[in-house]
Structures are given as C-alpha cells and as structure tokens.
Length: 150
Image (cartoon, rainbow, N blue to C red; front, side, top):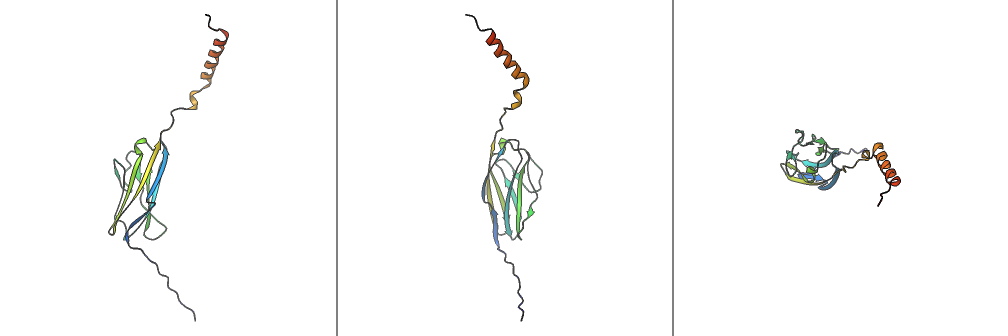
C-alpha cells in the first residue's frame, strides 16, 4: 500500500525580522556603495524607511544627494524580501549611522548600518611629469657645476 504524504509549509507570524541587524561598511570618497538588508514579515510589511541623520528615503523614491533606495525585491523564501540602499558617489557627509525601519501590522523591526568614508588622497602620480623631472635634474646639475662661492 502506497502512502500519500502531504507537504506542509509553516509560516512564522509576528513582528518583522531583519538580517543583519547591525553591519559596518567602508567606502572611499567618490566610490559607489550598496548596502543590502534582508527582512521577513508575515503579515507583510506596510512601511519601509531608510534614515540618515539628515534625510528619510523610501524604496523607489527619487535620488537625493546621490542616495536612493531601490525597489524592494522578493527573497528566496516566502514572506522574505531584500532592500538595497544605493549611494552613487559616496561623500564624507554620508558617513555615520543609517537606520532601516520595517513596519508590519504585527510590529516594527530595525537594522543599523555604520558607514565610514575615507577621503581620497589628493596626491596623484601625474604631478611628477617628465617636465618636472627634467627641471629638477637641471637644478641639480646647476648646483653641482656652480657651487656657491663664499
């Protein structure tokens, strides 16, 4: 006699859960940066916000100061999603704590992202050009051939 098995899916109901709840990221000034956070919510989320010390960003909203939040993507597991904060050109003003707030009828969850921005060096190897080297060489030759007379 063959047995028939039913598959059952279990859903955890309750306030949303985010993963990771805390993370630290670093970027060089001028680089692009993306920060992704996964979250699960059953019942489904009703509000999602990314907060900086100066602004509030919502998924699919217009970019401000090179910052935008991409549309929320479905995750691989039912009732799970991914949100991505995108900064096109990181500035020193983007450094600090960013908060993600996810709200559903069952409660609220949050995640914290610490962004550190390093200033790019203003030194460039291009400043030592062939003409600068030639000038330096001529100065050294001049000093060597014509020492100061006392």
